[in-house]
Image (cartoon, protein in one colour):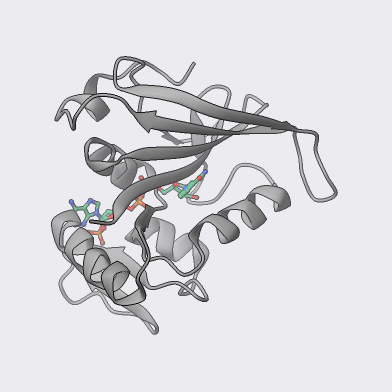
Length: 183
Ligand SMILES: NC(=O)c1ccc[n+]([C@@H]2O[C@H](COP(=O)([O-])OP(=O)(O)OC[C@H]3O[C@@H](n4cnc5c(N)ncnc54)[C@H](OP(=O)(O)O)[C@@H]3O)[C@@H](O)[C@H]2O)c1
């Protein structure tokens, strides 16, 4: 079965978004996201889809919305996270890829975290104001397995670390709801 990966860029104080946009400019992270998600089905919430403004090239973009009439060019709409995961599984099997990417935003991350096997977190080394935060990463459930620090390149507002967490415990319903704040 394809595994579910959450990919997110998160500030030191847990922020991921502001005014339905990213609160920083981080070209390196956009490249990292593209490389990590290319060829895989990608699930996003409707608000994140609207902030991106288009289907993701080279990936099946599955947009979750409770509005059953929601439709947009080049995307698959799903009226629940379960329906989105089912569509993503079918797409992953057709493409022969081993992963489904969940790419936000906050509402979708918190619902998908109990289903995920791996978290790819870009820890952005800055503190920013925002209105959306990443759910807590419970150290009883998630173990950091790799970390690479990066100085800011051209087009990056801040230094950052690319961190991988692997699930240690079997899926726990409470993992997203009761985790500790990220670091
Ligand atoms: N830093 C990062 O890595 C990163 C990544 C992604 C997004 N973001 C940021 O996160 C922010 C957006 O996050 P958000 O939490 O406001 O919105 P979101 O999670 O992108 O989308 C929320 C919407 O998804 C739909 N939805 C959620 N749960 C659902 C369910 N169980 N069944 C059916 N539909 C469901 C609803 O759409 P309807 O209202 O249509 O029903 C809901 O309004 C933006 O600022 C964006 O830039 C940051």
